[in-house]
Length: 205
Image 1 (tube, rainbow, N blue to C red):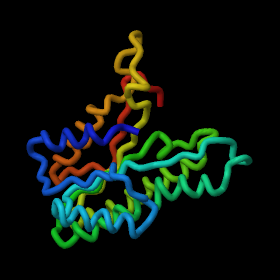
Image 2: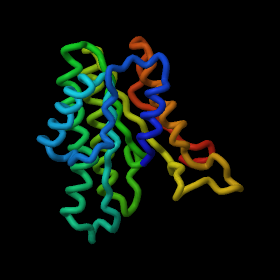
Image 3: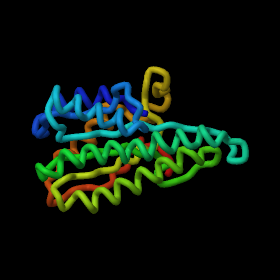
């Protein structure tokens, strides 16, 4: 998954993005624990003020053949990717609705729109997160809250996964991803995007 540090840097230097606080759930918190998520939001409220922008980027996997998957591993994967997303959206909505503004950004993946072999648990969680985004956007959009879902369709560049010399820009640049998130944040409410797909120029889809 792409680094939220890139988004954090972009928020700090992104002129034109109205923020009182950006809540990045890169903090160590059990995203499937309602009390832990609520506590994180309360701590953010007291330290930074209620957030105008909330980004959910957490996910988990349970890779393997369906017949052999550990049900508890699958439960955990779905809870992190989907139920955790719900808990975060709920806490964000409670704070944004009274103000009539805000943005909730949910990070999806290729598995949000296409289930791959040996990846049933990840697909289940990401499909559910996408459904949450669609439902939340239709409910919260008329209340002034922009909900957007991002399909990260491809490998994300990192120290462990750099581009090869013969295939430059064949992976998603974390800074490029962050820039796209910022561009969505800057959209006027007369032209909001619900879903944006991001992939390298050589990615097959």
